[in-house]
Length: 495
Ligand code: BES
Ligand code: ZN
Ligand code: ZN
Image (tube, rainbow, N blue to C red):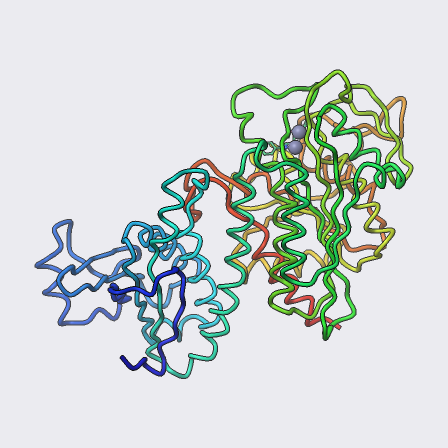
């Protein structure tokens, strides 16, 4: 069969599909007359009117009709959300594919590249199962049928292809992040973090440096070292460097990630309920190494360093104790009043090391740092605290296009008042009030003030127990990869 000129192929599944559903998008305000009777006759659950989220399947003709509401109000986020569920359906269809028709009205209302990018991403995320250690998972992976797009407006094909290419690359790294995030701590150890980083480095020609205990000791990175004292797994710092063949900007970006493969709280041990969720305490580091992979594979023009601090926080005879004082990489002494506030000890050292060694123009850290950010923002957005308005604006722009929500929170000096210690330069906790903000103020003490820096608390955004709001699916979200890719894209355009 000859392909339409405006039919672009997306192989989301492993098998070229023998059969497929045609997916037809319908708007409420442009509902075809001839379909009106058809739907009123056939829809048992009510009349199909093209309202947002309505789905009607004509099994005899193998056509699925999807309503997207009023064409003037259609948003990429809402379209993408629908396709997440179609991604989920692909898993059950046993090799049956999907041919998605985009009406002209849709690609007029929304930019085709961004639209296809997000649709591909949602399909791929929906089609990915998180039960990776089950038999069912292995069987399902093989079964997913192919997906293709047909654009009614052929003039948009080039844009759509660009979105498709980006979607295929980025979604692979998003799902890669979700994969390692969801692996339990006995499967994904600090050593495994090294292997995964090596894989990403090898695939993309990145420079990789791994700091084991001796190098960490030599560099006086006692924050990282203190955190892992109660664990039998040794701490690491892993650096990945991407130097574009043709840089498009002189700006240098550093991405830092918190990589606690498990956080029991240490001696300040967490309550048993939900402690298993602390295998997700490495989502910042997972996003950082996958984002640099995606940025490199897309060949973006901005030089990037990803640096992650990796450790396991456990209670043991050798563990760090409440009240202990250590000297951090930048020379500050820290009184550890609560060993569960360990992420900041790890990040402090990495921020200080990267700032000094690489002098980046922009430095972002991603961390599942505080439970308080979940209280503030739920699972809908990450909290952003920054010392630079320019950087915040750039992040907001990236958030808009990537569809990964951020919310700006204050970094006022008052939030640092309770970080005072009566024995050392500072203490690692400041009470419950404004917990995410005092955590950010703590990190700020390890950042060279000449560097534009933003702390992104992803404790809520990185995972969730159930679908919430516009976020579908449970478990790890891979949050951060899409945000960082768009941030790097925008930074690449800066002189
Ligand atoms: N990893 C946790 C933060 C967290 C909590 C992430 C819930 C995801 C879900 C972090 O290390 C932590 O325990 N923070 C403490 C800080 C407190 C002791 C000042 C917290 O948020 O309770
Ligand atoms: Zn903790
Ligand atoms: Zn933690």
